[in-house]
Structure formats: C-alpha cells, structure tokens
Amino acid sequence: MLVLRLKEFRKKHNMSQRDVAELMMITQAYYWLWENGKNFPNAKQIIKLCDIFKCSPNDLFGIHGDYSIVMDELDSK
Image (cartoon, rainbow, N blue to C red; front, side, top):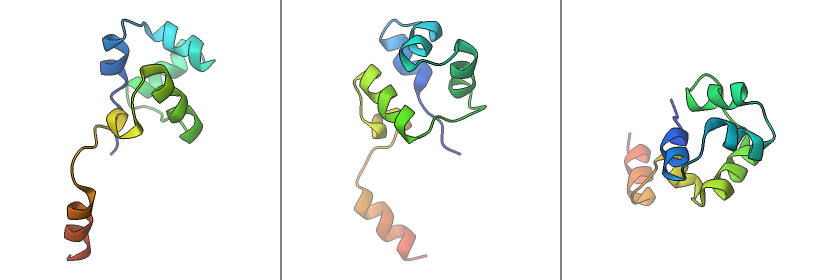
C-alpha cells in the first residue's frame, strides 16, 4: 500500500491541514482522509501537493534508490 508523507511535509513547512486544504481547494476533512490513508489524491492533486511542498513525487511517496536494480530484481522473479 502506498502511503504519502503528507504530514511530514506539512509539518516541515509549518502548515496546518486547513492551510494545505485551502491551497488545494478542498475541505480540511477531505485532506485529513489523504493524510490518514483513508483516501488518495489523483495525479493532478499529487502534482499540486509537490508544488506546495517543493518536492518531487518520489519524495512525497518516500521512494529512493536505483530503480534499474529494483526493476531487474522484479524481472528475475
């Protein structure tokens, strides 16, 4: 299951859930669902979150490393 690091980035930028929700033009309750893994933003919303938090999608998803090695491992199974 994919988990976004929304709370971590939000706190790093000294923002409240309400602050992020307003920038995303959604309700705070809807944003809470994302932050707590109950719902998931779409691709356009992920891009906007990355703009707000000044990060890449990989950062937001916590993905790091050499992807070619990972893909080679998956292909060998």
